[in-house]
Length: 359
Image (cartoon, rainbow, N blue to C red):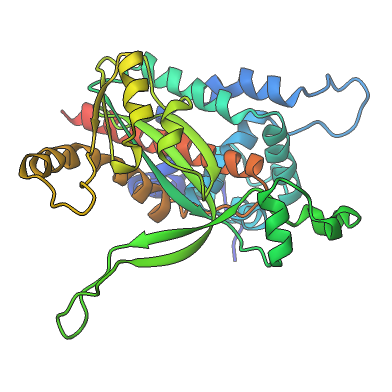
């Protein structure tokens, strides 16, 4: 077998471009250098005067996290595929002879960003890029939440009671190794799904309630461009509606309308939105033990046409990115979900830029 030459690699890159390399589109459209100041501030690397192997470029490492998020990869799988795939190497600016970060290096980089709580600043940095490109929050906003699974914990009833009360179970306190593998922030909840018609054509009398363990991703998107503008991570049992008053509303949106499902309908939320200058388009609930009035049905149906757009965001994150929390603790879960939100906005940016170029 002959050794690959420069022109062989260049030809392969050309073929990848012709087949539609998404990572190449990322490189051409997204200015990753814009993240450098926030990455440098969060990492606080030394000047190298004390010697030792120099760290990998922080922008390169951040791009590795983007690859991970796009493809739902573990650290070990990421290391292997960077060495294996030309498209990954080209995206990272690595040659065949360049040193590739190993799995431990990737973990340490992400952990440093996590502990520095840098994900919010990185998200805001790309949001500023979107605004500078002309994608201002417009036409109102849509709120919703989705459950994000995490590895299930096998705890006793007593341990669960301690965790709900905010205490560390006594048996874990003198076992640091066990404690580090126990997720004290994720919670169990019930996930309700619509009952499906049976084989005989009948419908079950009630919907299905499926136990679910993990976290919850709360987002607010702008109605015009459907970018995520505000977001928050909580445990899976957290109430959706209460999050509306915890920074999910974007005051910079050019319109005042707020769309959301019935979980966000409460007097506290309605009063809050009115006081803040927002106009509620939140679905109205069915009266207790009474049929839904016809005019409310029609109003809710009209709102659903707009509100349903937020479901496409979660569908993209779960089907395309395989959104799942592999880590322990809400700080790391926030990092994982925040990265998924940034990458979704990048993918959406690519799509809108492509549509604009072809118009």
